[in-house]
Length: 209
Image (cartoon, rainbow, N blue to C red; front, side, top):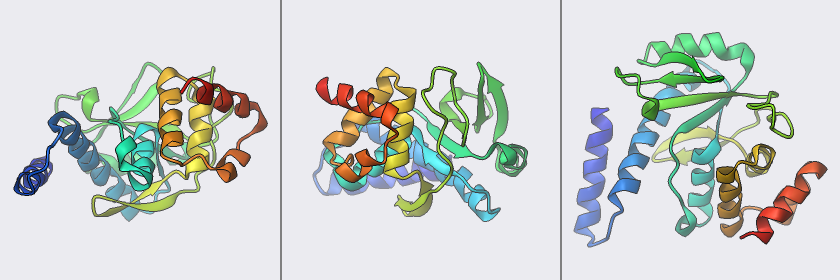
């Protein structure tokens, strides 16, 4: 993680030189997550494994591009892969120091030696439900490339991301939908692509904004 620390220190120096204010907690954690993201997606991309960045980090990437003022910190990295690629993903990432763990019904890859969940990449599977309470299964993988801090990352499209958030519909998912909406990401075209059963959930979130 030394490269992440060095990059973060350079960022602080450059920001201070401009006389700008930094939210240290937000930016430091963001650099840690991006370092983790670059490390694992670089390996998967080199080996031709299809994946998508999903979850809160995907929300952050899309919102940063649309309206950075709406950005909010996320706690971890979530990647969606195909179930058939799981063993291959485990083998590829093990070479870069990631260790597989299945805990509380979730599959994750943990990077640091202490096996801290803080440095975990959660694996989600296309065409499946993460939890039985999820309204509909996860979409198929059909990513779009986004440049995240200088590196190309395969990210879930906004329409599919919104579908996942409304399908899961936990409190944090509803907050993510509100942030996406405030950033102007939920256009009439995106809304039109939603399955009919998810439309009432979108309307409810908008009523509580």
